[in-house]
Length: 171
Image 1 (cartoon, rainbow, N blue to C red):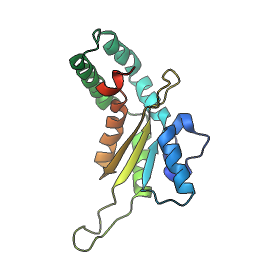
Image 2: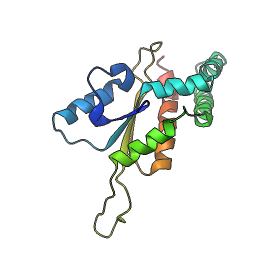
Image 3: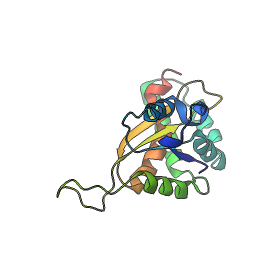
Image 4: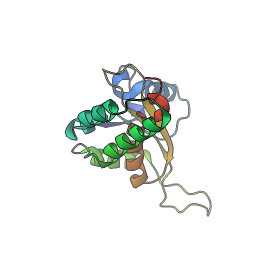
C-alpha cells in the first residue's frame, strides 16, 4: 500500500512517514502489549492531497490574510483550511487502500444481543502530517471510528486538525 499501513507493519525507521505516536504504539505492539486495531495514514498521503489540489498555495494564502493572530481570526483560518481539505480530491488509489485497510484490521463483533454480528469493531486512526518544512510533530489520533464513511471523514478531519486554532497560536 502506498498511503496506509497497519500498525503491525510500522518500523522504527519510519518516523517521517508515520509520526512519533504511531512509531511508539507500534513498538508497544511489537512487545506484545495490547493495542487496538489501528490504521496508520502515512504523511505522503497528506502531501499528495496538498499537491494535487494545489492546497499549499491556498493554505499559504489563507495564512497570509490572517494578519492578526486573535482567536476569531484563527478560527476563521482553521475553518477555511478545513473546508479546503474536506473538498480536496484524494490521491488515486487512496480510498481503495483505505477500504482494504479497514476491511483488514476490523472484524465483525458480537457482544451478546447488543451488537449485530455484521458490525465491525471500532478502529483508531493515526495520521501524520509531518513535513520537512515544519519541525512540529503534527500527529493526530482519532479513536473509536465506526464504519468506512466515518473513517474517510476522520482522515480529512485529522489532516485539518494540524491547523487547529490551539496549534496555530504556538507557531
